[in-house]
Structure formats: C-alpha cells, structure tokens
Amino acid sequence: MLLQVRNVTRLFGTKAAVDAVSFDLPKPGFVGIIGRSGAGKSTLLRLMNRLTDATRGEILFEGRNVLSLDGAAKREWQSQCAMIFQQFNLVPRLNVASNVLHGLLNRRSTVATLLDFWPDDDVLKALAILDRLGIAEQAPKRAEALSGGQQQRVAIARALMQDPKVILADEPIASLDPMNAQIVMDTLRRIHDEDKRVVIANLHTLDTARRYCDRVIGMRDGRVVFDGTPDQLTTGVARDIYGADASFSESATSTSIDALPSDADAEYARHMLA
Ligand SMILES: Nc1ncnc2c1ncn2[C@@H]1O[C@H](COP(=O)(O)OP(=O)(O)OP(=O)(O)O)[C@@H](O)[C@H]1O
Ligand SMILES: [Mg+2]
Image (cartoon, rainbow, N blue to C red; front, side, top):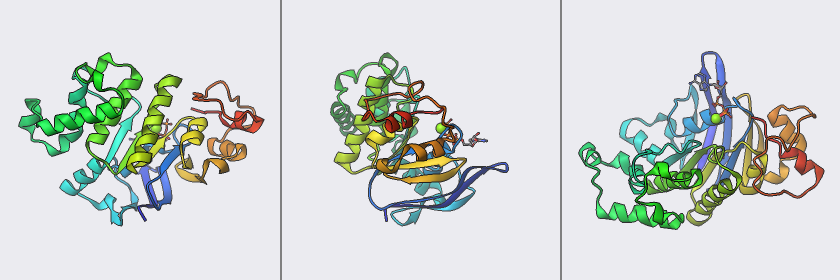
C-alpha cells in the first residue's frame, strides 16, 4: 500500500476540522477532494504535509507513519510531498528561474541562498523543468510579470524541483480563468501520467474533479462522505456532499472547463458551492 490515511483527526478547540478521516491509495493516483467551504479539505492537505499537526491518527506513506517524523526526517518528508497553493506563493520580485530553484531550499545553506548562488546542475534542471512545462522563455522574467496560469506553472515547476513523490494542490485553479485552469490541470495530469507521482488536489468544482481525477473523495463537516470514481459521483451524491437543496443552480458558480455530456443530471451536478 502506497498511502494509508487512518483515522486522522484534527481538532481546533472542540471542533473537528478533520474528523476520523481514513482512505487508502494502493498506487499513485490522481485524487480530487471536494466539499463545501469549511469541509476540512485544506486542513487535510496540511496534515499530510505536516504544516499542521494531527490530534490523532496515522498517515502511512510506503509503510512509514509520516505524522511521527521530527527534525530532518520531517523536512525530508515535506520535500517529498510538495504543496501548490491557490495564490501560487511565488516570490513576486524574483525571477522565474530563481523561484523554481527555491524548490531546493531545504537542501541549501543560508549563505548560498543569500547570495542567490546555485550550482550549474541545479540551474540546468530548473530550466529543463520550465521547458517541459512550456514556459522556458519566461525564466529571466520577474514572477509578478507573468499571467496567473504561468505563475501556477512556475509553482508546479518549483514543486518538481524537489522531485516529490506526492504533489498536494490546494485549489490550484480557483484564481484562474477557464483557459488557464485547463492548462494547469492538464499539466498536473501530465505530471501524474508521465512521472507516476501522486496528485491530491482540492477542487472547488465538480466538473474539474470529474474530468481529471481517477478518484474523488467528498468531505462534509470534516468527514469523508464519498470515496469513489467520477462515475459514481451522481447528482444525488453530489447534493449530499455539498449539503445543498434541490434549488441550487448549476450555471451560476461553476468554473466550467469544458462542456460535460449534456444530460440534465450532469448539468445539475456540475454545480459548485463555495
Ligand atoms: N487554524 C485554525 N484555527 C481554527 N479553526 C480552523 C483553523 N484552520 C481551519 N479551521 C476550521 O476548520 C474547518 C475546516 O477548514 P478548512 O480550511 O480545512 O476547510 P476547507 O474545506 O479547505 O474550506 P475552503 O473551501 O473554504 O477552503 C473550518 O471550520 C475552519 O474554520
Ligand atoms: Mg481550503
């Protein structure tokens, strides 16, 4: 078993942001996590990458409980388990290549970082990754000069610099227009398909989860209320996950990447509730 999340709970005060969550991933998958605002999606990702500590439970990756790691072992896990955020989290005034090289920060001395000194091999690797993602020509530009979609690809490049086994993406396309959203999701999917890295992405629209994921986990009030394939994610199930009533309108809020099959159910289920 590659990844086993076992009974993971995170309390804030008396409230469980993540409540006894369990799921297994036998092999590298492309997993979407959906659920309304406050369902616990971000907290779950932060628990996996140890940005937040769990109150109880275990997360086993390749058999090792990553929740009990400390010090260097914890940092090593964090570099194997890269995060991507909605707001990209680049250094705006730094050039693109340096932003990508910052994916190696865990491994570098403070002096080298202060002087912005990078070994040639690392620079070449960064440029190769940017080239792979179709943005090599942006390398010398300041990050802030790029479009949102380009910036998110720089963030993905920075993640790849760590050569991670897992990529955790927290609403990676929530700030992007539909075209850039598609480019970024295609990029993540390609990285999964070609490199066999695990991708776990919190997604705010059902249509994106359906289109890109092999597996969808639905959360509600900190709990897993659905765990299945996109096919199994019927309208009734979606309504249950989002806790919506029958009156919600699909078209109002969905970041539609592409038209789904036009049956009424799919239309209805593409609804996103923030
Ligand atoms: N640091 C914190 N302190 C207190 N409560 C928190 C903290 N972080 C999260 N919570 C609470 O935990 C619950 C889950 O939050 P989380 O951010 O994981 O939800 P989410 O599903 O990512 O929502 P969104 O779709 O809005 O991003 C919420 O009720 C939130 O208020
Ligand atoms: Mg969130």
